[in-house]
Image (cartoon, rainbow, N blue to C red; front, side, top):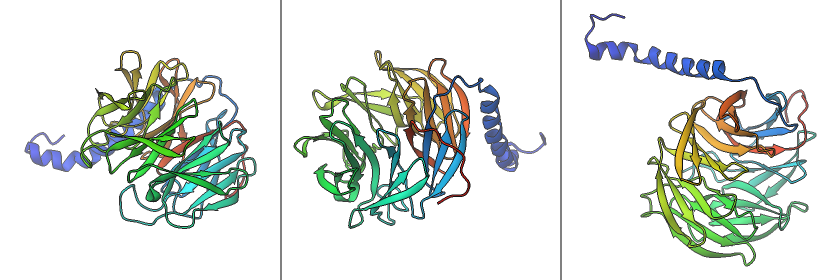
Length: 362
């Protein structure tokens, strides 16, 4: 190991190959540690790949990518599906991150999942940076965060007509979560360091919950507990999770984390929150009774988003730097598969329609 070299020089000479070996070894160790896959549900996992400007179709039964749809636009970050699983909705955000200079997207693609084809386009009429689509099954309405309008926009999924907008009262409303009872939406306002509470019936802003001085706290992703009592959003810069009481509409506590948090989702039984630690290549498991981290799980680099499969048995985690999706067995907390996706794999959605292999792309 050239032990005669001075320490500083030795580190400089060997740091790059050691880094490559470390990254390669980490992925190899993850692959070797994967248990045999449990029985898979039939269906299709959709993955929005930011850098590739594509949407991956992954067969859940085989954990293999079967089709790649080219967006021909720059670029989709998030995706959702209709309740019948036949249609996907992919907003085209632009070429920059939230709050950064770049193009301002103005469209959303409508995709037929069985045929893997783009069948429609919603045009918002001007640059709005449309980001997250969420289907409201209570009203049969599709909502999309349109952050340059400081609103979420409601769309009729049948006619693809814009119905109305609900103002958030704050800039950079990037992500949002709907309450399970269908009454409220909660948006994270990145630049304003706050969360807005929206009434889905009156289409009004009810409250804005401050999480710190403007710009001092950066919040991005948000999720809600199964009983609608708590909201969860991580500080983008510090290793802590904001826990918000939806009844009082106030910050309940900051939960310390073993790394910087990002996307999250609650397990179907309501016992745990699965939280991406994006800078640590790990996922944290948080007990929602004690509000304590009880376990961490190693995954590929930069975990972004968590999707719980409808049967509640598997959590899919997009890991954008390594172009992978980790499938985690919720019963054992073991990674059961590492699935190949595209460059900067990010948004995830589920369709109950099985994916079949198809040649080529759109």
